[in-house]
Length: 199
Image 1 (tube, one colour):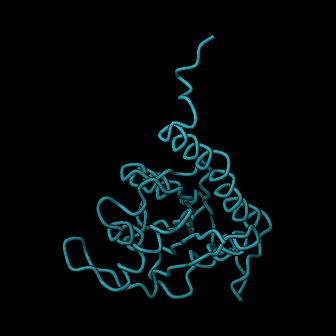
Image 2: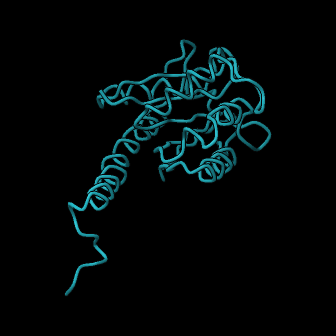
């Protein structure tokens, strides 16, 4: 099965970030992916420049082996959470996210949603060379989107979360895989580079 790593970027137990990500994970599993989730509430990560923790080594290895990644974050003070930034900073250099298809999910308590956190997260991912899926998802009023048992209660929210999983799958299928296959074929001389074609 194709491995996918998803990261819940909240350090709070039973967070809404994790609940939203669980819906994405469910859809990824339905699509045939083998999903491994790292929960910020249990991860033990240190600051850059210090010896990598066991969790950091495990996270880095899983991301390197993954076909794609989902990063999820709550919006804190107009930006991404410290936990998701710390997870990224523990990916090594060059980053294990380099060249990886990455889908972004943000949740927020307010009406505007997690627009700013996704914007900042997209910028960081682009800087380290990740291939960011265009269709990021921002969930506004997240406290109202789930019931007391943690199940998604809003059909529109559920549809958006499941669409994020499908967007990652289609991005990998339609853009990433054909691109890499063609480049490999050109390097091996099996296919002439398209820029050498004559008319």
